[in-house]
Image (tube, rainbow, N blue to C red; front, side, top):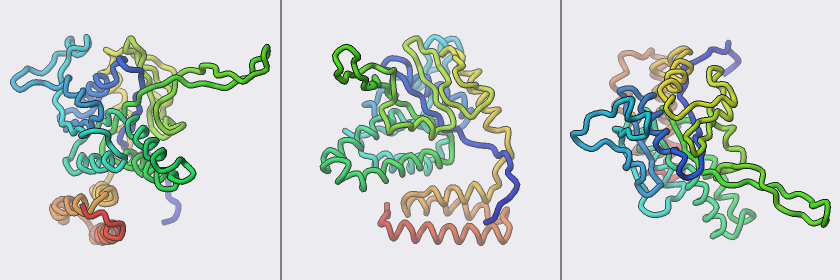
Length: 303
């Protein structure tokens, strides 16, 4: 395919939300997800021992009011999938595929940091980065690719830890660690992979650290109770481009499928859309489906 005129297209949010324990990452992610989803589905991949369900609305409860949400007493409607024990990167990827098959419009990954901890543990068990890195590094990248290509909005929460620089002490001449702020528990510079990166402080204030949204400028600060306004700004920005065509949406779903079962789950949508597609679009989808099926069968991703 050659060059073509660039066109601003509608997009899906890929947000990194980082903070220390107790800063309100899960609650803020749930509130923002519900505001972005509207009447759509919100889903949560929970590696925090089911803590997200503390914010679930009980059967029969009335929807939370704006006042309840603003003071942190809100409860949300969402689907959840939790890990049994420590999760592997492969298990993270499988749950992301399940979310796509379920038609979840806004997916929360709470917490992405646990996938990095799992990667480090796998590296240690494999004898270090020199020996195990060639196997683990591609998995880390594939998980990130799954998130960035997910056919919906994604909010990933990250834990923060102290970062250190090693400097020479002018008095003793020795090298000593010096605290240099906070950094996410994740692969270095992962924040640059997301369309928006925000941090939460202990007062639940949100700071925009890295952004591609001009309406949410870098270093701007939003109070925790301003989530609806933030979501409205994001929706307007994300939806400001041209809507993707039906064939483009279906192609994305075919290409995103990570197992043959997930690929087969797209078949009903392909069938339902056939009368609205041109001959060229149908041919393109058939080629993409066949190529993806061959790729998955060769990789042994049967389920």
